[in-house]
Image (cartoon, rainbow over all chains, first blue to last red; front, side):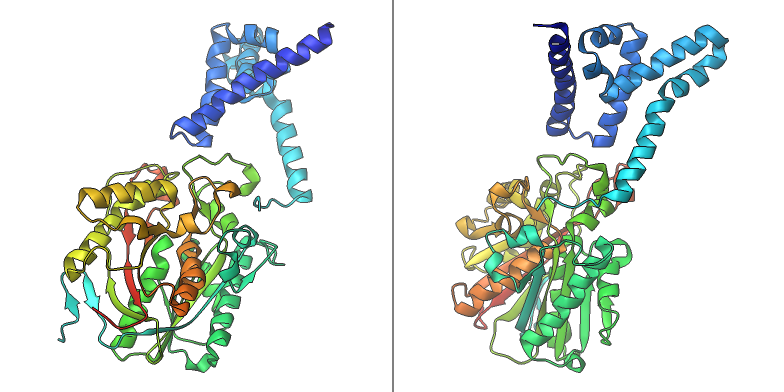
Length: 123
Length: 339
């Protein structure tokens, strides 16, 4: 098996495990989707701060950075790098700077999709 | 005062109002359910050609109201009162849908119990001699209700397994002073009951105690045997709530048995992926206006106890962590004026 195929499979498995955890929380707890969303981002931040999430990213690649925990990972990583460069001020700028691309893309593409498509119920 | 008061919560109607006509118009999912043959019309498009779901819901109300009048061959000026309500803020589905009706209007809010509340009030108006014809009508819409109470559909949020599917459509009845039946012979008005359930994705569990309370009060007030009715229909507890209700009634020694059913369970097939069943003002109302009314008219059912249940929460109360108060109103519908 070549390396590309292996990285696809590990991304699928790691991403799948993270999303399955979310599904289990929806099915087995009374947490609302909004709370699960915030929980995943926060867990991503903490695991990155403790140095654990980098190991998950090393294995899973996009499977670890695309789910919401990956957003927390980017926030924490950006904060670390800006603190190194600018000191305490970096704690306020780093997270936003590192995730600006993703946030802007979400707004732009979200807007475009909302203009083009209409949501409907599954009949 | 005549002996209209039966116990604390039940009232006997001396001149029992007649349900002279019904109508129901529903959306595509309901039109694929087991009760499809009993609806007056199924609309394939949830927007029904309108720009918003709220406008569509009002159109459901407007068209259903027109259908009730045409089913009854009644002119618009023959209606004395309309009593209506829905799930949207300030009940705009009802008021916008009925703004051209030109008939005195009472707006009510009882969430999914609205049809029970409006029929109870309408029945007393007629029995009291204040009206000859009263239309009781309600509506709900899956897409507008998700936006109102949970998340906008655009979010694509996952639904919890205990959640119920809001019925899209409108349904109503015409109550008249004269006619050949079926008759509303008694009503039992429910109290607000709150056992502290906070999970808004499990309304069935929240509403079951209210249904049990009203059913218990009904049999206590009337002294009727527990097997008196051909069918006792709650709405809309869904499959989870119905099981809880069965347990609650058994523990109070009320044995209704197999004739206990629920509108939320009846309206959809399990294969339709609606999780715990149907809900919404139109759920119990459309089951009554369609299947139940047809069965009463054909004599397959002769006497039923309809117990619509409502969860009286608001998005604000949920955000503030409040529990969910609920209410259930019982309506006795009989082909022959009995007990």
